[in-house]
Picture 1 (cartoon, helix red, strand yellow):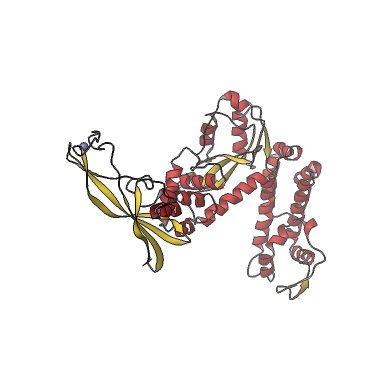
Picture 2: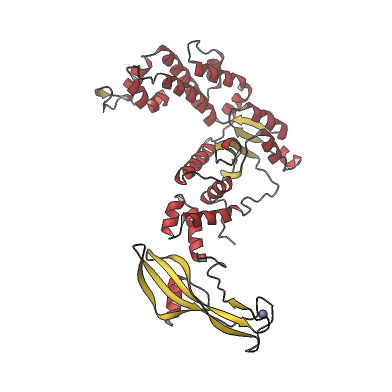
Length: 428
Ligand SMILES: [Zn+2]
C-alpha cells in the first residue's frame, strides 16, 4: 500500500485519480481551531474534450496544461478535528478548439466546496433531532450550507402518491411556518402503519377538498374510519368526500376542549389581587390532573403554603376558594373520568345537564360538545389510539423548537419526513 492508498482509506476517498503528496498532512490553526490539512492532486488522461467533444487519442488532441492550485474541499472530521483537503487540479488544453478545462472528481459536486462525504454526514445528522446550528458545527460548515442541503432535499418528491389512501387515518392541524395560509398546516396520519401519510401546507376546506379529490372516488369510498378534531366544517367536508367513512372525534382533542375551559377559568383567578395568585399559577398542572391520580399520602414542603402538604390537600384548598372554579372543576373531572372509563351515558348526562354555575368558558365548551353530540358517541364506540396524532404533534413541536423556527414550509416538511424516517435521500 502506498501512502496515497492509506490516506484515501482514512479519508474514505474513492476517486482513483486523486494522489497525495509525500508529507501530505499538516496541522494548521484556522480561526483558533486545529485543522488537519491534507494536500493532494488530481490528474488523469481525459477521454474527450468537454467543450468540443473530440476524442482524445494522443498528444495531437488534448495535452496537460498547468494546474488549478489549492482548491479547498471540506471533508468530514477526522478524530474530531476539522479536516480540509487542498487539491491541485490538473488543467487540460484541447488543440482542436483551443479551450482549456479542469479535471473533475466525484468526491465533490461541480463548483462546490463541500465534499459528498460531508454532505452525506449532514444528511445523516438531519435525520436526527438537533438544530441546524449544531449540525453545522459538527460538520465544520456554515448553517447556510446545512440549510441549502435541506433545501435540496425539500425539492425532491418526498411523498410518492401511488393513488392509494389508507382505509383508516387521522387528520389534524398544527401551527407551521409563515409561508403557510394562516400559519397552519394539515397532517394526515395512517392509523394502521402509525406513520405520517402526508403533510399539506393548507388547512383551508377548499384546499383539503382539492387535496383528497386527487384520489379516485372508488379509492375514497374504501375509507372506513377518519379521526379528527372537533371542528364542524371538517366533518361536513369529510362526509362529502368519504361517503362510507365513520368519523370519530379524537379523544385527545375532546379532552383538550374541556381542559382549555378549566384552564381559562383558572387563569381568570390568576389576578394579582387574588391572595392565592401564586398558588393558582404554580399548581396549574395539578388542577388539570385527573383527581383519581392525585397523591393523597406523600407529603412535601410547599413554599406557597409554608407547610407540608399533599397534592390532594392543595386541590381541595384551591377549588374551595372560588365557587365557579369548584363547579367547573367537577364538570371537568366528570367528563374526564367518563371518557377514561368509556362511560358514554355518564358523559352525555353531564353535557345534557351542566350546572348553571360553570364558568363562561365551560359553557362555551359545552355548547361545542352538544353541537357535535352525534359524533361524540363514536369516540366511545370505536377504539382508536389518540397517541399517534398526539405523538406526531409533539415531534413536530420539538423539531420546530430545536430548529428555532423554520421559515419555509417545504423545509419543515422535509425535516419532519427525515426525522420520522419517511424519506431517505441516501437510499438510491
Ligand atoms: Zn476541444
